[in-house]
Structures are given as structure tokens and as C-alpha cells.
Amino acid sequence: MEKVEKAKLDFDFQNDSLYVRPAERKYRSSIQEDRNFIIDLDEDGKIDGIEILNISKILRVPKAFLKDISSGGVKIDANKDMIRIEIYLNCLVRNKEKATTLIMREGNPDPENIMPSQLNLATA
Image (cartoon, rainbow, N blue to C red; front, side, top):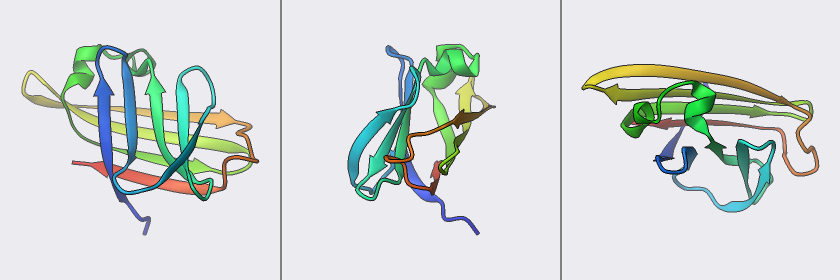
């Protein structure tokens, strides 16, 4: 069974960015994999969190959809060949729960900075 850590999730409406990271980990540095994904690393070089810029455009939903996130999860798998990111969000839209999912694969991560790791986060 995979370990799931409690996470802090923050959507910045003005900047259209989503930030997710574990509630209790020590941040060391960040790597910007492309223009929309910033990966945070902990002291051991393992993935500690993620910031996604232009999130509403990536998910193809209105920014208002992301304004009231009720719950969600992030699963990140990294190895020397690839980073796989799965994001699940449940949002309240007109008092009804709506769901959206993003699965992204990024090839050729920086192997010197990102250690093979898994990060499973959940918000409630």
C-alpha cells in the first residue's frame, strides 16, 4: 500500500497557479522542468512538492472552477528517465462537486538533482 501524506494545496487565482506540497517536509531547492512546472526537492533530493503555472489553461477549465477546491490528490513518480505527475481535483461549482484530472509525463528529468522517488499527497 502506498503511503499518502497530508498536503497543503493553494490555488492563486490572480496568477493562475496551483501549489501542492506535504504539510511537514523540509524544502531544499526547486527545479523548473518547463515553463509551467516547478518541482520542489527536499534535503535528500526527493520530490517535495510541485507548482503548476497556468493551471486553468493546462486543465482546460475556467479559473473560477479552481477557486473552491474541496479535495484532491497528487501522485508523482520520478526516475532517471521520466517524471509522471497525476493531479486529481474536486471543486465546488454552484454547490456541486466537479472533478478534473491531469496526467503528465515529462521525459529526461535532471538525474543529478532529482532522486528516484514517489510522492502521494491528499487534501481534504
